[in-house]
Length: 301
Image (tube, rainbow, N blue to C red; front, side):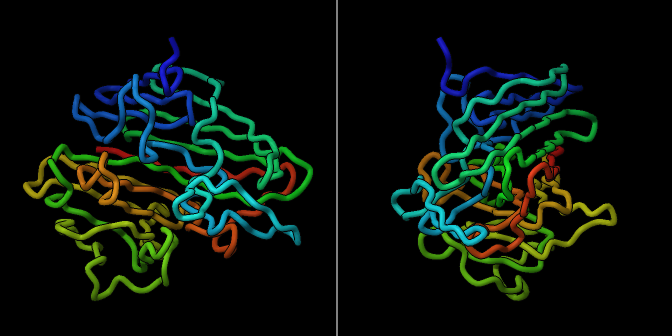
């Protein structure tokens, strides 16, 4: 009998373990030294609340599911019916095939065919690798069609330090600007984090702060890497989520409205573009026929 998430690709390197699934090509589990870092789901469960899912060819939402591209109007299915949006792309429930496999590494592939609302072809490749540096995820999209197409990518892992809620978790976000989630889950105006409860550039407890915000204007290290850090207040366990310069945004979400999350974990979502980019054009990638775009993020504990 086939499980809801299809084949389970188990990876191991040192004390790191991960499980990548066939359905959606997502990350179901990640652990270090036997300690689970993800608020994931079981092998016999269907993914809920976007856990570990891959968000391509757009992350977050598109208002009304409609956008204009090169003078043509397109209408996507309203996959977030309650808010009238198209949400989180078109590959979340697609079967990805294995192209390469090693004990600590798997490469998955999927061809996104043209369809109503997105009449473009994308050849997609995901590489998950475990090493002494933790987990590294590399995504490559290639325009396999005959016309230019819009593209963006994101990931939706929920991280946990094993605490009952995230309230006591120390959070550091290397971002100078933020946009709150507005009506219908679409982002509001962007403003500075200075002087607000959303300034986490210095580590501090999340406390009662409800997060469903897009952080941008990211501070980067000399290697171009931006980081979000989670740690226990007593200086114990922690996890760092990092992203390369292709990712200009982190969406942070404490899952308050979701009964199966409800602050027991926090989604740290690296994104190449923000919500509604298909309509606004902000940080949206234009892929000409044959062009490729590669983005890399990861996590370590």
